[in-house]
Image 1 (tube, helix red, strand yellow):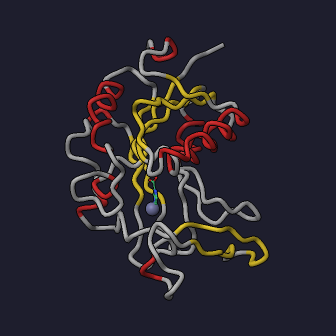
Image 2 (tube, rainbow, N blue to C red):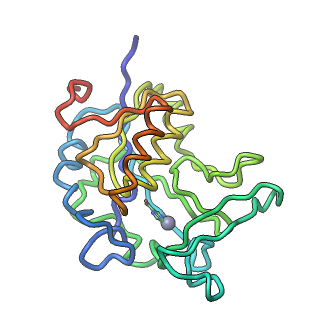
Image 3 (tube, protein in one colour):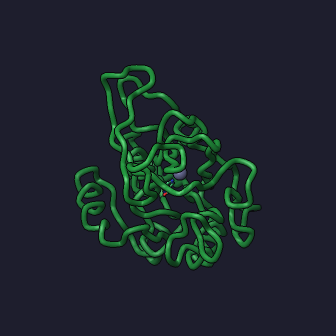
Length: 223
Ligand code: VGL
Ligand code: ZN
């Protein structure tokens, strides 16, 4: 069996990190030394993703009417713009990672010269897109990134995922990587969650999908 590993670093951006992030995840910045250490290893392909929204994005509470527009609290039902019978309930957030803002930038301390490719996601204002592969609609999917093609074209077999946030974009990126047929592992210490109490549920989903959470010293990371 060939082993062709890729590293996908999810959304290590200013808006997801203290001290100034608009949607700061506790400890978000603390993962960078480990992420940089991982980026120094000889993965076949190293990709960084960016959440990259227009100002009128559907996930921003500011784009919805009161009273159901409280960031972190409210959720709304959104319709598939290509098929209104398909719906998704989605949580509302503070404005974040708006294209062209400082908050949308990757952390400057990230060792970006080791990254082969940056993949942007969340540009379609009509849909939420936590996964770096695609939005959650399936019938049909509305917005798809180039990530699956990049990985498949390079002959990648194994995907290692790290970044922010463990319970949102890392979670759905890892689940989609498994759906794409890659053996998928999440490097636990190289992630942080918006809501750490959600991780029990996330781990159940990983188990069902065949995704494993590994430690940074796991033998699969001996490249
Ligand atoms: C994310 C909430 C909203 C993430 C992105 O990167 O985990 N979370 N948009
Ligand atoms: Zn977002």
